[in-house]
Image 1 (cartoon, rainbow, N blue to C red):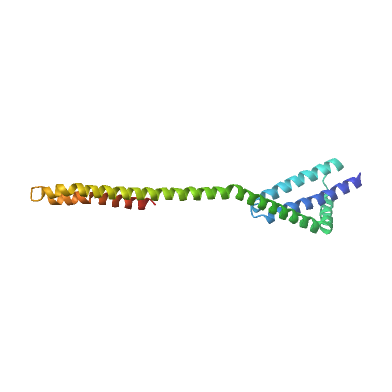
Image 2: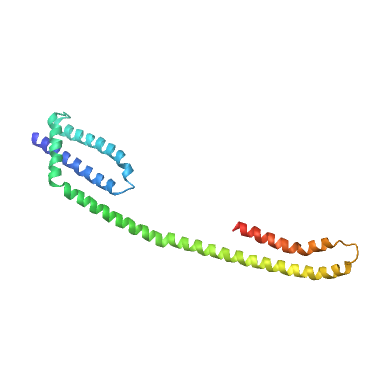
Length: 193
């Protein structure tokens, strides 16, 4: 019975050291998981205390004595002497493999979804700019043609009204109306861009 108690506590100390090194290595190697360390420390110590009490309960009816803690410490020291470096090295290797796998997954997702979405956005944006510039050209041409025809149509009126009471400045304002409207729309569209 005593041998079982000693072996169980040595093994519990060993397991506690192994689990602590693994989660400490994993959380320490990732900048995203470092903020979880305080929470994981609390979970680790609560789980360890519950596990040790359960082992003591099964092997010695739940009696905690000083040599219980000495045996846990001896199991942890034995783990540190024998397997600590191998466990930490293998945990780092697992972290590196996971980082590479996650990096590969990210690159695949980026190439298959994000890059096509960016290309689609650029194409739509380019097409919208082309359509906008074309519509600006159509608008400029339309106002130029309308202005030309109003000048042509206003010429006989202007010529026939010379010397009469028709105010001259009203005709000059009428002739510049379409130019001012076109310039106003151009300036307004440039402010929108």
